[in-house]
Length: 564
Image 1 (spheres, rainbow, N blue to C red):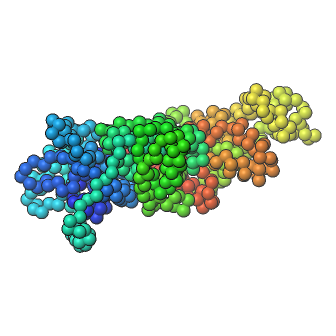
Image 2 (image 1 turned 45 degrees about the vertical axis):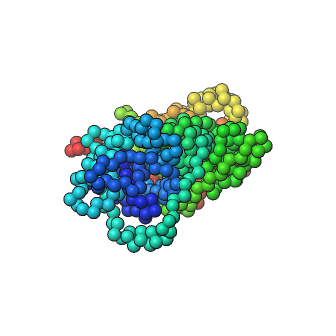
Image 3 (image 1 turned 180 degrees about the horizontal axis):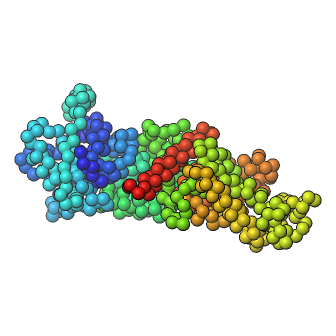
């Protein structure tokens, strides 16, 4: 079956049976669509009748909330690679809509989505195979009334194994009382939520979708920035504020373009939620309910009415590891980025293809050298620039005489070797003196590194790892194919430095402050690693990074082959 980049799934099953069908339908859809899957809800839509199927407003009921949560939860388990988005343009109370010049039609003109659908799919049960062409045409016309699609829109009638569901559906139908009616959903003119919204995932989408469902006019979203990110796990991998906002805007415009969206930065836990008198409802999870209660306490102190707290359930993450949260979370997604290629390496035509050179950098206490040794154990040639730095200070080495001339003979030991502690005291805290030293030493270390790389090339080695804390500061990126960076939270780095080197906490912090920050190093990284957890977790990261590196090297070889 052909694969399409973007598809739209029209769900027609009755609302009370839809939860049973979501998993098999998504599984089938994932075999047709590979990137973005929009979901349009129209329970009870008949695509097999002679009359033309038209979109109508569907009143919001409480069951839609649980359906949306179930849909995103199943999507995370079954087709995590797909960007699933539940569309709500047609889910709206009908009061005041009819008799206003066509306002009863949710789509006066086709809605333009951020990704144009190339295929439409449906769960509509086809009773007679001979009707498939009629149903497909009806489906295409219906979808064309709703959304602007790619010309030549394809259609696919999904056939999940509904027979296996018949018994479950029958049992569920029996549980419903004959006179039972869906419970209307209480909606509000102005709704608010807050969050980091890093790497938009199923739990975010559930929160946003249900908030859109609850909101009639305005949806206010507070997005954490700066101070609120300080204690986040792997905060250096959090997407920039502007990018997070851009992704939010795109998602929300797809979901419900009729709402007025206001997205504001949050520098404290409350933001405008405690000062905006028009707000009526705040959407929270089990985890953030206490935050919602704190908002209401502040509102009462400010003379404002409390907000309705609408609580949603957290989505469980069926794929979480022992260092990740049980719920779907951004921190888990960030941890899964460790060892992967975050940004493709830039091609350097002046750099021979082999050996493939990894520049490994990281701050004090980050575990950089331990990772270098792990890579060495996997077959890489390790080039220790710190050790080479020691060589440049030896009597007779190229940098020795220049360092002595610059800083005086008082930095020498009795045997005429350079006392690096004495030298360190002269440059510590003095940027000009430090630059004088690095201008002498770094070029000499770079020459020694290049000699080691040449030696590895002559020996036919495939991969070299240049273990260099100053890789980025010294501007050595032109010597390597990829930059790998190890990071660690500052508090953990301080703890490691004081234990390892016997220095005070103050000195450890000064050392870290004199180096490039984690965030600055990550900006230049192709791959990021973190040694915060147990050694076996680090080993799995390194193995992942190594295996993915081998794939990249193999592809380079194939692309450069004269036969390719």
